[in-house]
Amino acid sequence: MSSLSLLIVLFAALLIPIVMARLNITSTPTAVAEIVVGLVLGKSLLGVVTANAVLDELKSLGVIVLIFLSGMEIDFSLFKPQPASKTKQLGPAKIALLGYGAVIVAALGFAWVLDLIGLYHHIIFAAIVFSTVALGVVIAALKEKELLSQPFGQTMLLLAALGEVVPLLALTVYAELNGHASRSVWLLLLIFVAAIVLLLRFRRPYQWFAKVDKSTTQLDIRLAFFLIITLVTVAESVGAENILGAFLAGMVMKLLHPREETQDKLTSLGYGFFIPIFFIMTGAAIDLKTLLKDPTSLALIPVLLIGFFVAKVVLVPVLRLRFKPQNALAGSLLITTTITLVIPALTVGKTLGIITTQQSGAFTLAAVIACILCPILFNRLFVAEPESFKKTVVHFIGANLLTVPIAQQLAKGLYDITLFTDDPAKYKTYNSEANVKLLPSFSQGALHEAGAYDADIVMLGYFDHDKNYELAQWALANKVPRIIARFETKDATSDRYDTLSNAGVEIYNTYEANIAVLRSLIETPSTLQMLTDTEAGLYEITVRNRRFTGLELKSLPFIDAITVSAIRRDGEFLSPHGDTQIHLGDHLLFTGGKTTIAEIRSTFEKEN
Image (cartoon, rainbow, N blue to C red; front, side):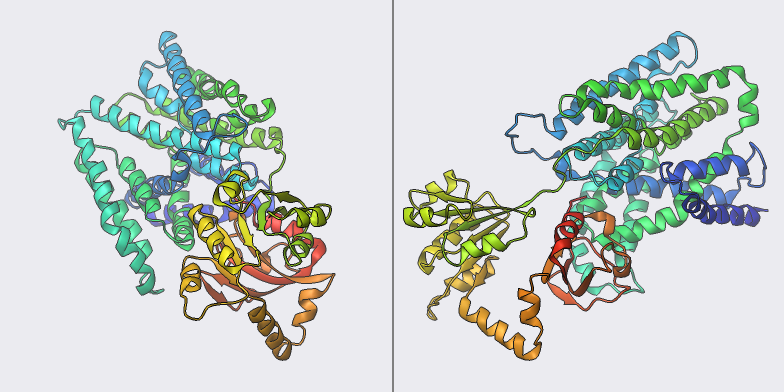
């Protein structure tokens, strides 16, 4: 019978996404559908799935892997101090901290009301449950709308991260203080010490793993599970919950900066096998028949549902400090989404004896209802903010016969272009043809004051190569992402050009460029036509939109309108074919019509 139950669960896990795709159900998270199917298959209705030793172990592994992947979703760069906004608007970090503080206060207030009216008497535990946020569901919703790189998306991501980290830590301390173990709560510090040691120990070897890894070894995956088991074991040894160890393992793995494909493999393994079993078995364990027979537990469901909304509705006035009123409401509804940490918390509550099976079922059903409604309401209410695509800022230092035509011919709508000159005569000549700024001199102070180095790309087109060398050094000091410098003549006895090239400066020389073009004309006669054709051209884009990572080349949008000739990945060129998978940061070199390049670039280079 145990094998039959496992077979039914695995078949249900296979069938659920197929049915959802067939019925075009996109607003409901797959996790919620799995819980609902578990309700149907379990003791509530059909009773064809029953718990056994194998399913219990897989269920435990499922929640551990789920929390581990949640830890890997934390974007630590969002917690770094952000530069002051020119518009004096509050940054995402400040809004998130202020908003989540309000959530904690509201959750405590509603939990106190439940105690006052006699529905539930453990105030702190109820507040922990009400303040949780489903980080994975929030990230999926933000990715779908391509909002992760926007201030709104960053704020929601920080709120969701706080809604998983803070309740998890609070739950661990609460369980330790209210449990029957004799260990001191200070022993919890050991798990953090273990996490730090593992991080320091494996940071350097992890970079070496990529060089010796083979398809039959999968060292990155082995390391991930070693981290999980190690920290889960340490957590249980000091009396903490195993989910805290799993979450810290995910954070350690994230700080190791794994490759994109590593995270894809871990996500595939988790959501492809372990996590569906956890959610289906959670639904199967709920006894609706008993729950519906108990008037107190039945009355608790709508009250708890209200509690989930009340705890997060306080976000609306905080989010309105930065965003539109409609988006503030949509954001608070998205943060109300909760399921992933609620179920492990309820398991802890039952272990501590502070929550009954009926009350646990009521909490779970209320969380499931919230998880169904909130993403739907968010998708309906959210209105896109203007200027979702950031133009590439290009500054030309030197306005002349070389730089002005280039600035004029760059694709309109994709670049924010400024030329700088210290020659009044050239300013008068070119000011009507391009956006030219006149500086008193090309001194370091004058360029810095004019914001010449506040750009994504700085093109040094000055005719004096000695001056260009000096300008390149200043640009490097200002940490400009891309520097292109023109050097028409080179001193063979000087190594300064090699020094600039080693520092990342891209050296341009008309003589060498002409040689390259002429050689290409001989070897590939169509090269010149590709480069000069007014209807088509050769372009390069960088894949920054995570929505396309993992997709095969043949499945990309616009693939029928372009021809991808090469992919540059980690400094090496790949010969693409239809089954080539796209990775984050890939550079696609392709030919296509100029009418579509703006849309293609805005789609693929939108950070998400």
